[in-house]
Length: 251
Length: 251
Image (cartoon, rainbow over all chains, first blue to last red; front, side):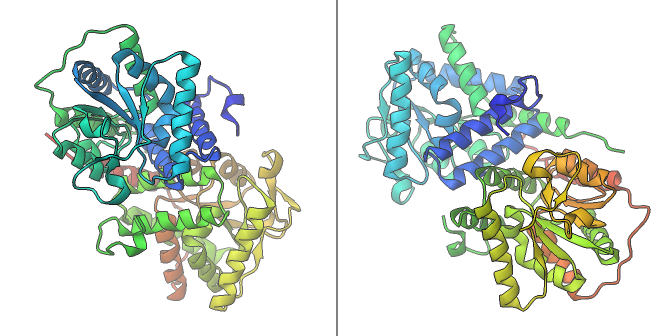
């Protein structure tokens, strides 16, 4: 089914549209096979969350926005799925907050790196955004990781104080936290290692998160970081939302 | 990561191995992109279930085995993911119970149909199994569906009295039930339309289900169908298992 042709009043229209974005990006050669599988996991968790932004997720997103806004060297690290689902909105956010954007993917190939950077730069040109898109250089290192997964840009992730890194894997999230960075992640599974390790975890779908962040930036919201942010309490609230949504009774 | 090279004592080894099987099948051209996304959804639901066969799922599998065993014209309908994750075990089951196996895929292409049938027939030859693998003909129809999704074989699905159809979509499950068939499905989401529509729903991972069914058949278990089978009560038990597994406390 082509969801574009489907009825926008379909209760799962937004989810089908996102699936279509991922399938398109895969057809363009921008995603590894494992990225499609990861998207499916996200679909399932979002389904259990009710495919909506919960109040606790909205609070976490506001906190992430405040941290990016207050940062000295904020970086938004994007992988293939993030580009496909949220790339354009994140570029608008980056433009408004003077963030750099760095393409950083798990299974690094030159073709995918080039394709993702070209995609982002194309949107910048179309929307007249001034955002530095990094990822070509590999002159930075994330200590504690091995091989290509340790690679990043010296001027980007390596020297960032605050990093928004949606859809990150557990090892890399831990390594970035160990570097002393403020790590903001988007993860629909509140039980994942990434979710439990990050400074601020947004248990929400990345497209909805990016829309909300862009809106905050467009409105010029002057939010300040909360130094007493309790990430585990926020995760617990998300988990409770999911559990409540599962309390369906058949019998 | 290549899970084959990973430590088999890794708590999620089996899940990583299954992901690898799916990625291999995708690389062989046997799967549509949406199949990878569907696998990801399955991974997430299985994670929430604890990646184990629950007691309620084991009961549903035993009931499905009894129904297949008692059938006049049993058919096992397999799609790409089922072949990749459970094909070989299902062929052993089919051999033991004199079931036909029919390849029936959602996004039908000749190349994928040929590839999947060849894969199954290759296993039959290697393991010396006598199973009729159907799917080449499209001389049957499932009323209520449109286009290629209505196609099946007259000698297979169309005339089956009992059909085991793992990983089926909701529309097709409803249409098969409407034909008066006993429909046995494997679906890790107990809330899905497929799960709620089927005669017997196995809320379990298809690879574990196929292993269990093969084992029952090898042991020649003489189980009889339970005419009072309460599928909604079985789904409720599965949902309760998932909810219990989500009762993690962070704070």
